[in-house]
Length: 412
Image (tube, rainbow, N blue to C red):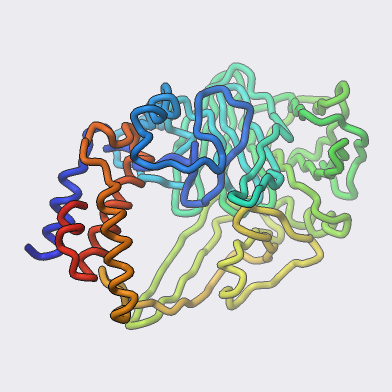
């Protein structure tokens, strides 16, 4: 039987009707390899804890709990609710189940909830087995009397609209140096934090407020309507009058960053067009950021972008931001371009292993194949861990096929 047919058969063998909508959830992990650490409101997998198929019946039911991992169409605009939604997209926590889990934008994590938007500049939590982004409610913007829906998305952004007592649009763009909420009607701005506010000063630009918190962080908050916020209680800020337009929040990484942040405050990223042109063994990538308003656009580049960007104007005076994928560096400009070499892709390795290594691989792959569950009911019931189990079996089958161990291949 051709290998492609065996892989297709394997997929059918492990197929499950409940995994149609979402094949993974950043509730416990994502393509970002980031995990929000929060006070447990639901049963969830412990950080750093290993999982194998053998313990699924005793543990998985508790871990999954009430998690359906299914798209909640009530959190989607009616137009989007009737179209396919990208599987395992970076913003899927906005629409899975209650949609109350954070998404990772880098440098910020954001929760879009009914009646509020919550912004976090995550801090590092790590051990010798994991690195995670610790969540804390750095800023919560009150959207009382309003509900939210995802109304648009592209490869690098997702837009949430609030309707009700407060009308607002929230463009969530990967790498944005500011978190932005755009108020579409006159509204009194109310912000709160879990930290104590120890200093509030008007910035050098109209509508700018510089806030110091007792956790040692400093934030720049800019209001498009030129309103300066005032402190309200120990942990709150409020606009003295109703206002309309963008409210933008940026963590100040270093004191020298404030002038550049103020210059960039009026340039609001709202999305981006990604293009890829591949020829032979190389590919050219480009991101054209979509921007509303004048000024200099500042965006954070991931480590894998930093080594490759060809036209970057680095703004190191702004400082850098932490993420679990590495240090984020700030670049200025609306167009990113870079090139990458394309490696040959196939099911087998590029070079055959030596006879010595082949024998060792046969020994190991046989052990792994025997460890696979023979009872399909022992497989994880949720699509996230089901996908991991399926991928593990597929890898074992491919390795066994490459080292001519047909018995282990067929077991997988």
